[in-house]
Length: 228
Figure 1: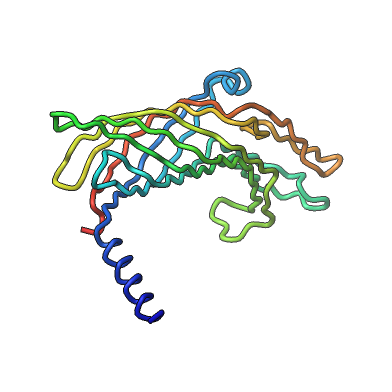
Figure 2: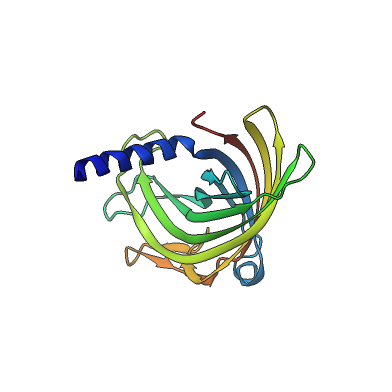
């Protein structure tokens, strides 16, 4: 009897999963700082790419899902001959400042008498900022002499925003979106904040600290009913 109940339950879940309505897509994003972040960083620009996966309720104009993003918001190259004692050849020291994000998304799409569909959304999740370096002999060197992470920190954040979807065909939509983010303070580095002290053989870090307050403008493609 228990086995029969398990089989029936599994079949019900299988049928339910096939009845669900899923969307997926990707964005190119550009973010500019506002508030305290702008005071701390000036005109720093955050370019990112992100992917989104949503479930749309059949009985309500709501979508729930997850958006993951990544970008490099600053890169710096130094050519140095003093990185290793007794080694005077010129080496390339590349340092990248990275931003990774993960956000839960809830979206409301009002019913309108138009092909263009507006929406508003709220997001909640985390941002992870980290800086990595790599030392190579030349640009084309396959292996690095040394690489590592200078520093990393993360903070909770939330976003509010909205946009429009423009149909391109039966399933594909062009999406234009704007959001504004606020959240907890985080320590991070930007381009030019790390110096190498050859006499001591160490890096000197000029950390910045601010809430991650920025406005993001996005353009993307969304595919409706991806399992159709």
